[in-house]
Amino acid sequence: MTTDLLDDIVVHPARRLTGRLTAALAVSGADSFETEPVAGLDLTLEGVPGDLHAGFTRAAGSREPWHPRGVEIRSGRQLSIVSEEELAEVAARLGLPRIEAGWIGANLLLSGVARLSFLPAGARLFFDSGAVVVVEEPNAPCRDAGRAIAGHTGRPGDELSFPKAARRLRGVVASVERAGRVASGEAVAIRVPEQWIY
Amino acid sequence: MTTDLLDDIVVHPARRLTGRLTAALAVSGADSFETEPVAGLDLTLEGVPGDLHAGFTRAAGSREPWHPRGVEIRSGRQLSIVSEEELAEVAARLGLPRIEAGWIGANLLLSGVARLSFLPAGARLFFDSGAVVVVEEPNAPCRDAGRAIAGHTGRPGDELSFPKAARRLRGVVASVERAGRVASGEAVAIRVPEQWIY
View (tube, rainbow over the protein chains, first blue to last red):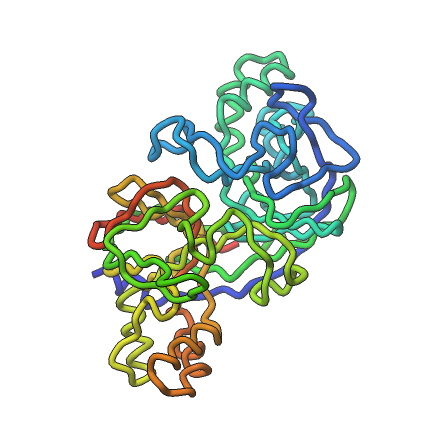
C-alpha cells in the first residue's frame, strides 16, 4: 500500500508570470545543430520547420535508456528554451564572458523568468502572435552541447565542464500546442498549472 | 523579481511504482463516446485507432478557454486513464453500486495505483508489450461524462452531481510515447519523474 504517502497531497494553485522573448533562433545551416537569432520564427504543430528536432515523432536516443535506441517515439523535444539569466550563470561558473544561446541549439531565448529550468511540465507560454508552447521537461546538459561550446571558446575542457556547470540551468524542452509566428523582443505570458508532490 | 520565491526549490527524486491494467477499453461503435473492455488494444503514436481522440492534433474545445474554439492544437488527450479504486470512491459518493470505466469513455482502467488522478505530467507507464504512455494532466470531470452516467443510472441528477463527486478522482489524460499492444490484466510499471514546486 502506498496510499498513505499520498494522504497529505497539497495542491499549489496555478499561477501566472511574464517574461520576454529576447531572441527567437533558427538553425544556421543544413545539418547544423547550432542556431542563430532571427527576427521571427514560425512555430508549427510539428515544431520549427527545417529544425533537426521538427516532427511529431523522433528516434529514441541515449536520453531515453528505457527505449531501444532508434525506435520511433513521441517527440517531446521540438523546442529548446533557455534563459538569458541562466546562461549568464553557467558562463560565470565556467569563467567565460558569455555563452550564446545559439551555440547550444536553443530555439527560444527568454529573459525575466526566474529559474526557467524549473518551469514544470504542463507550463504554457503564450506569445502575442497566438503561438502557445507547452513545457515537457528539463533539458539535460549533454556532451554534444559541451563540444559545441568548446568549439567556440577554444577550450577543450569545456566539453566536459559545461554539462556539470549547466546542471539545472540548461532550460527546458517543449512542444508547440498552437501554431504561430513569434518575434524576437515580444512579451511572453506564462501559466504554471496546479502543482503537487505525488 | 520572483526569484526569491524559487530560492528554496526542493527536488523530490524520481520514483517507481507498479499497478495492473484491469482492462483496456475500445469505443463500442461509430460515433460512440463510450468504450467497452477488450482483450487487447493497439496503442499507436497517434493514440487508439478509431477512437474519437486519436491523432497528434485536435480541435480546441471548452476545456481550453485560452484558445479560440475549433483551432487546431496539439492533442495531449489521446488516452483517458482511470482507476478502479477512484471510480469506486466516486460511485460511493453518489450512492451507486458501481461506475463502469466504459461509461465515461476511458481507454485504460488501472488498479493498485494510489490516487492515480494525481500522477504528475511526465509520469510514464510501461506496459509489458513495450507500449509506453506519458501522463499529460488530470482529466476534468465534465457534464458529457455526467450525462453518460445519468443515462446508465436512470437518475438525471447524476449529470451534474458526477462532475462534483469526481473532482480529483477522474483520472488523467495521456499521450502514447511508444507504440504497442496492451492486454487486459497485464502489469504496468510506472516511473514518476523528479518533482518540485515552482
